Length: 499
Ligand code: ADP
Image (cartoon, rainbow, N blue to C red; front, side, top):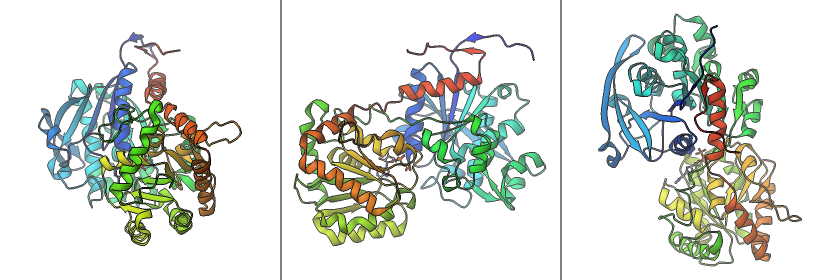
C-alpha cells in the first residue's frame, strides 16, 4: 500500500444520533449528542451532528432551520424522499433528515415501522455523506441501534464512492438493552441485503430475526461504550443481553469512556430554573431550595428530614423493585422520598400507591418535567439510583454537581463516577452498595442519613467534594480524539493535547 502523506488539519467528524438536546430528548443519549460535539469542537475537531427532523422539535428551532438539500434515498425496492435542513446551534452545525411520513409523529419511538424509519435514517446519513460536501467526513460516529445500520450500509453500498471510501466508523453503545430487532423480512424489503449472505449472516441474531445493533458491532472499526465498567460488563452474559460473545470477540476494539455532563447547563450557581442559586462557597443557600421543593411537592417542610429524590425512567433497569421493597421501612425511619419519572405502568402505579399512602412524606410525579428535575436536583439531600445495570447514568453526576449526594449500586457508570464515603479518611462523593438487595440498599441509604443527622461538618465536606468533582466533557473529548486520530494516523492533530 502506498504510504499516505500526512496533513495537519482538523479531523472531520459526523456524529449521528436519533435525539439531541435541546431539540428532542427521551434519555441520556440526547444529553450526550447535545454536549459531546461541542466539546469535540473545542478539542480541535470539525464536527457536524445529524438527526431526524421530528414533528416534536419546537417551532423556535424549526423556524430558524435552513433547507439546504433534497435527494432520494434507495431503500431496497423503493426510492424515498429526503430533505436536509440545517441549523447552527451553540457553534455546532446540526443537520436534520426530513421525511414527514417517517418523523412527523407525536413521539420518537415505539411505532410498528421503527425498523423501516431508522433504516431510512441510517441510509440517508450515507447518502448525505455522498452528496453534501459539507458533510463529508473522516469519521462517522454512530450511536445506538437507530443509527447502527449506517455502519453496515457504508461498507456494503458505498465503499466505491469516493467520499465514503476512507470514512472510519465508530459505534457507541449507550444501552445494550435496546438493539433494534426485527423479522428477517426487513432484509429483502427494507435493507436490500437479502442477496448478500455475508452481510445477512452478521445481522441475523437468531433463526428468523435481524438485529441492527449486532450489525454495527460486527462492522464498526471501533466500538465504544459510556463507562469503563460497562465495557467490562458487556462481555458478561448477565449484562450482555445476548451480545456478550460479540463483545468478547471484539474486545480488542472495545473502549469505555465515561460520559460527561454539560456543566454550563447543570450549574447550581447560574441555573435559571433553580429558585435560589448557590455554589460551594455559599452552600447554606441550598437549604431554601429544599424548603421550596418540599412546599411545591406537598411534603412536610422539615429541614431535619433527609429528602431523597429519584429522577429517571421508571423501568426495571433502574432497580425500582428494591425501592418498592424498602419503601415502608424507609418511611418508618422518617425519610422523605420524591420520585419524578415515567415508564412502565406497574411501576408508575406502585409509586402512586405509596404517594397516596404516605401523604406528606412521599411524592410520585408521573411526568417528564425538565424544569422540575432541576429543582429536585437542587432541593434534594440524596439521590437514590439502585440500578440493576447502568451504562453510564447522568442523574448521579448532575446530583453531585448540585451537592445532592448519590446513593448508588456499584455497577457500570455509577461505579465509575461515585467515590463511596470513607469514614476514616473523609474521602468520597456519595454512597454505594454492591448487591441487588433491598436491605443492603436501605442500609446504605440510612448510613448516609445517619451522617446527615449527626455530623453536619462531614456532610458539608462530602457535598463540597461532590460539587468539585470534574464531570465536564473536556477530558472525555480528548479520549474520543485519541481514538479518532488512531484511526486516521495520516491526519496530524490540529490542537496539541494539554499536558
Ligand atoms: P437513561 O439514559 O437510562 O434514561 P440517564 O441517567 O443516563 O438515564 O439520563 C437520564 C436523563 O434524563 C437525565 O438528564 C435526567 O435528569 C433526565 N430525566 C429522566 N427522566 C426524567 C423526567 N421524568 N423528567 C425530567 N427529566 C428526566
